[in-house]
Length: 194
Image (cartoon, rainbow, N blue to C red; front, top):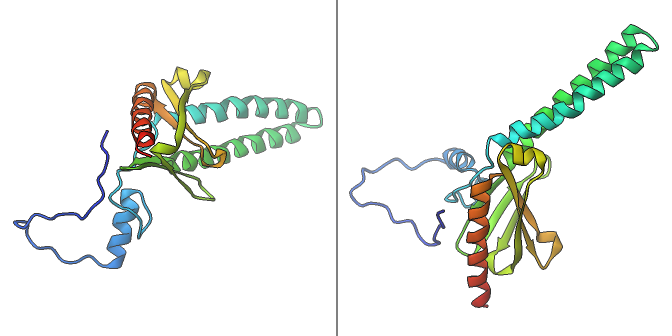
């Protein structure tokens, strides 16, 4: 795992000169790097496993299919058209929920810096949590039945202020354990320096 150092970026003097990019190029590069224009574009944003989206889609399907069948059967008591309309409406809601979940999973990311861990999330309301290593009280890993079936886990960092707790879902179980140990070691080192 790489921890970025703060400080000026040193360019190679032998490199060929390049044209200065305009403001729109800076914004595109920042968005490509996973941060907002004017933010810290040098951060290496890491994302949850692609299996997280498959797991979330399975959850939506496990709720949508039975609801559509039950709604269709209950609606068919009135008429076949009502049953089909209810079943179709439930399926459409399931598809809309799947699209929202895909965007929500894509919004998760985390980046490590020298002094803290940054966690971003949110579709409608974007949130960026900055958790200093020295403020972490404990770190735990949770995995529900579906997460375990997909080999995933959720890493949760707890601090003294409940509002600053953060979680990173969809990590491979080995990655979550390694990150937990690394963050715990960094937290102990930072707390000892306070």
